[in-house]
Image (cartoon, rainbow over all chains, first blue to last red; front, side, top):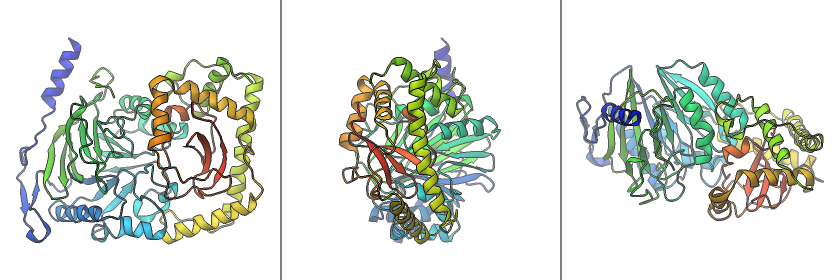
Length: 310
Length: 198
């Protein structure tokens, strides 16, 4: 009975729309025929809200990364996100100076010129030395924390979740009174990917901490597609790992974890947080919106378990 | 040498103690706490001491170099790594396998890994490390650099809670059947042990 009530409660509060403009905002359009499809925004886009971009697995230096970067720029013209979260695999295949330029700086130069700050997490293709790189804003740390408005962000190194990091995370969260607590890192605790799937060993370690200390949202990458996971123990999990690579058709079709997935093209996310609502919009390389909605802040308590397993 | 369940639990207890966990979250599955036998404690101490000696050596060498800024340019990062590698390689020119991984420590670590990965977990670990990982070009040579082109395979979080603790400068990494110790900044392979996978 308790489980039924919890399920119904989730259904009531999770008012997610997949259609642009259904969250009470007026769609903003900024047609740019020279650069592809019109920009159609389904976010409130209010000054003072916490507005940012999420993208992962970007660092190829290949054409697709650059094309997606152009779409980011076009969206920023109508949705002036202040910063971007990077889910790791920031530099594939080499870490020479030329790699930093080709696989990051050149691709996102227009955004960097507009003072967009990138906050990076490390993936399994990233060396620790990236933490010193000026444009990754890691302050010399592999895992770190920062605040934006009423939102508290935790960048974690899921590639090496050792006891020191676990202790840091637990202690930091224990004294965190922010309205929203968001963790981002590379490996997804929940995933419907054929190639990798859920990282259950990582989940065993971090999920109890997230639940205990009320983390609301988790962004990850590693899988080269987009997936919105059904809420797990009161936490929203997203995978945004198609910023430079695409693993087409890799999402398991019958996965019980999937709320919405997109594995047909590369993509990134736009996020806006206002009070107790988080709005999101997922955009593909063509500029099309492939998922969007508004999510209320949930309380991640152990009692609200709706885990769907690996 | 035979490794008893007590020894495994003892390592576990050590990991929990070092991590400062209260057992209410991540470490709850690794309870109960046990005490290291004097013999096993000595094995772990010797291993950890050798890693610390390496860490001190490389810290001393890095301290002689220009400090890398927290807002460094790519060229600075590349140069720092290159020079750091050269200094450590020169200082450890005579380093050889098992300088850090003693045979006794290797046996203990194998037992921990085997205990952590059973059934499906074991099959998945072997599949990930031996088939999926892009680590084929990593040389199994002490004091050689881990190639930048190769993946740094994720170390399973639950295993890291159980293995002997390393100073922050050194990392465990699986490559093929082997477990490596890799310097996180200069990328050099500090040491390795074979047949690590269960």
